[in-house]
Image (cartoon, rainbow, N blue to C red; front, side, top):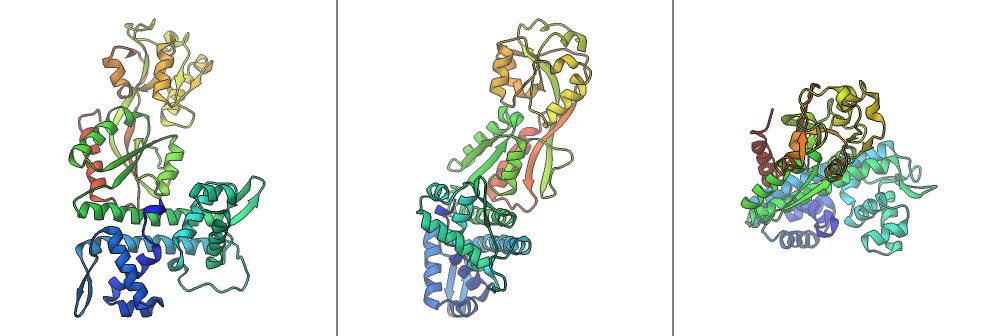
Length: 408
């Protein structure tokens, strides 16, 4: 993540020059030499392959590209400032009585962020160092410098090894969102230069994988063939945490009611009914008006506990048919569910949209039952404070358009 990003401190220098319209004025405000700031600006312009300032006799003024970057840098710094304040508020002091710089968030370095992120995903300094390809002493030094900068304990020893303190966990989320803003800037500036090589990271739940998401990705590729799309699959709770930390841009799939976090926005695209599904040629295939008694002899494969589809299965079927819990298989993989159905007389309770291809191929079928067919909302979930790039807005627009013809 940080390997391709510019120096955070250079970005701060850029922001000060943009505000002061002067390198000399910015130098006085952030206590750097004019030559250091000049070099920082040059390195940023090389990194982004574009001019960020217009040099005039009366000062330095942002180019259009510079204005794009400025907006993202301000958001980056706001995330860092908020995260540092919260970490220092709830954290334990490293040294009592030690003074902290007036704006410690402006002094955080890329190396310190890299060590913080690595230690979030490791249980020792040695493992963390290997994860990011640095020596253990170098990582240990960077981690300690960040603690000293904030005068806050960020790491603690546990029975499992090294872990982040509560303060560090708050800080790491803010830092990841700050870094995400610069990644967004890189995407916007590449588009500005006419070579959009930005990336969209999508958290995908089962229903979206079969039609909406592949169609949207193919549609985007026709307009912007150089854009990279990353699809991350997993349990909803894991995907939600990735979304809240900026590791995923948007979630697609079943919405939760009520929303599990005040930091997200949910948008319904369409609703889909759940049905009892079996293999083609199942003993119940072709029969009409099936009741719970007709379903009683058969075993089930259903989504894992806590998902909307599982709750509806328990409400409509399992609560009235105790035998449905016998020999139950829990699974969220559509491939595995399909193979279990094809190799047995098991039943499942899912949306017919999820088996659209299998129905066309004549291998799975929706059974005709007298059961209630509840509808669940399918849509997108984003962070409230997310500001998408033009390309990301286009992708979401495509998702909306593709949903228009689906059952509402």
